[in-house]
Image (tube, rainbow, N blue to C red; front, side):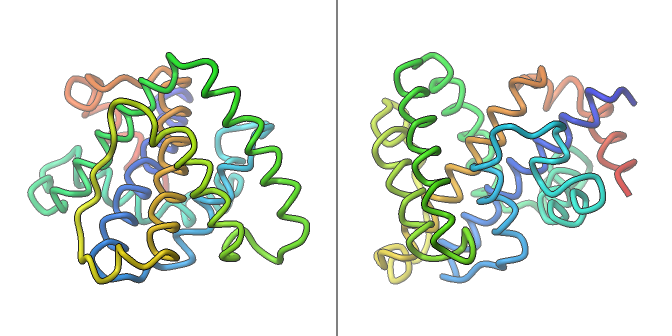
Length: 209
């Protein structure tokens, strides 16, 4: 296993974690903060020294991304049928949407400016999980990615999705998924790798104890 494949599996686990969290939230109206926080924190982590640092560092990375790592292993392995179809669709959609974003330099610049503004706000709140922080990240998604020609359609229980704080959470998680998909691409990850490099990626996922 190369160090690049190890880094790619971190990014891929984060993509699948975002996808699974959106799927759960849209259907139940609730999400585990232990899985949510490292995803939202990663959006503001722009100058990390390593890929692992984006999701909590060498010691926390496997636990912080435990959910996504599990789903990624299932999706790439023999348990694909056990993965929620919506989760798979969201994961592939995030990779596709980020690819479109990568070709929109003005939008990337706007996102960078908005992240800096949100980072300054964080000093006023105890956590990125504060509803005002989540609303700011959601607003960033609405002002940018929601305006691209391709949009991610989220399916779930309308009783939950119509609640502003839940729809804000959904968009904030999608933003975190875009961050992970961007990392995946920057590390050399491509959509076809999910088919033709499955074995190598699975080996790297299995080795992350």
